[in-house]
Length: 154
Image (tube, rainbow, N blue to C red; front, side, top):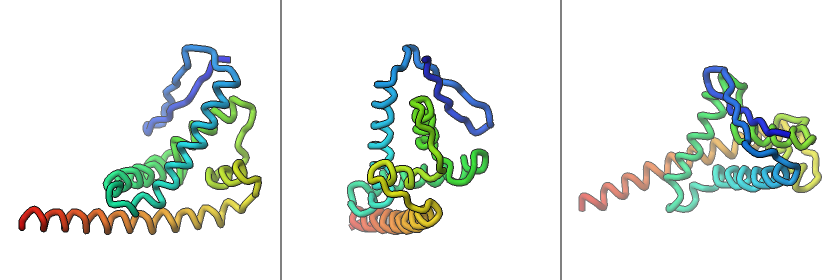
């Protein structure tokens, strides 16, 4: 089977990326595990990346891009749209394992632990943690900038 991955763009048209080689099931499994790992890592970083001073600027960028995906791209693709989730769902569909819910975190918990958690309650909790992390990263980035500016003037 030739793999066709849809890369959606904001004007509503789809750009198709075709793999030049035939993707076998083992490659799809590898891609599935890569998405599970990196998407999970991104979620954890978006929630906790503000804690370490070294990662605060990168965290601000990461969380801002996530917000843009959810609410700007979400205008066209539905609120909470995530390109990583979209690509992962496409891979899972090609594997013959379509996703039955819209919540990536709910899918992740079920995939890793076997527990089936209500997507609505979970999404509300994730959204609350995300916005708290966003407020904290903005606060600490402004604070770090001001402290750095004061040190440079002294």
